[in-house]
Image (tube, one colour):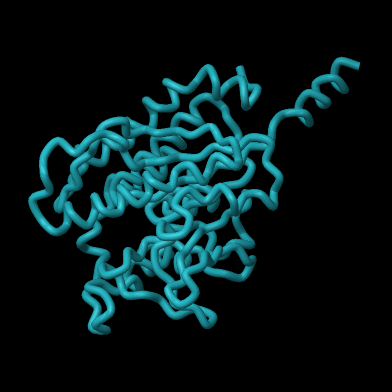
Length: 273
């Protein structure tokens, strides 16, 4: 009788869907979110990601632990995995990033992941979202495409589409999890709401801030799913052209801190002790 009752409680445990948002390097805060969820035994049943969030989502769904993902990103040198593009449609070619990610992934296709994975991209031709999720689609390709900031990376031609960064259409991809019918949605917004402390000094900062404003103005759209919205970066984080491990650790720690801040509500929703 006791065993049956425990099984009943287990079956009644909420089904959790996690959407990891994009935000360039600030997306590393997603790694801290994963670390915090693992630490407190919060199970993830399905996961999605956009842009930088797609990297953490892909590695996690492919079987890497949060600690292993942290080790990977701390040793990631974006300048070594970026190759110049000669297409005239972007400064960098995403192919080298794809090859690098492919070498890191223990499984290669969406059909092989340990939990369902969805990665969002934007189609320049139709202005619509394309979701990588088919069993035969390559995870590394999807992730590289989802990280392809327009103007920085060249677009990728794929199945009649012309794909770039998913943040243009769905930066916190909660909607793509709906097919799994989660009882709890968790979304991660890594775009800080804080005021920029000084005027931007270069085109990189202007470009980054423009994206921030666009994404913040669209946050209300995600309330349809009544998510627990995690926002690890409360204050404005200045983009760095040459980030190092200290900067990465700061972002990861911000994710862990946000989990601790939201822990009472999180435990109640997930029904964990």
